[in-house]
Length: 123
Image (cartoon, rainbow, N blue to C red; front, side, top):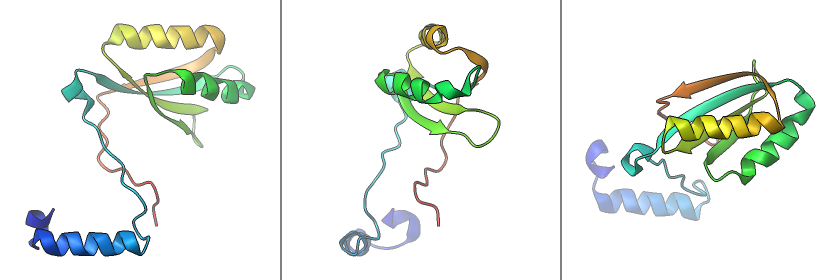
């Protein structure tokens, strides 16, 4: 970071510690490159046949080890979630398993989704 903005590492470290102490920075979020682990990242958006099953779907997804995050959508979809798997067959098996219990009206699979910016607390 210091090299990129032209400041010394000591100067950056000092300011970073000050921001943490003043609680302007309250945590750090890792951004993992799953491809380096031999895994593939997909984003799935779904519309449920019965929107009342959204809570049930969220609970099911929380129990799955391959789920990176779950987001409630305000747009065209009921729910959005990230799946990290070894291959496409594993992805389809997971979707089929979920769909048997909580049927989807519509789903969209987004492949090669790269996160450019993670902003947990936008101003």
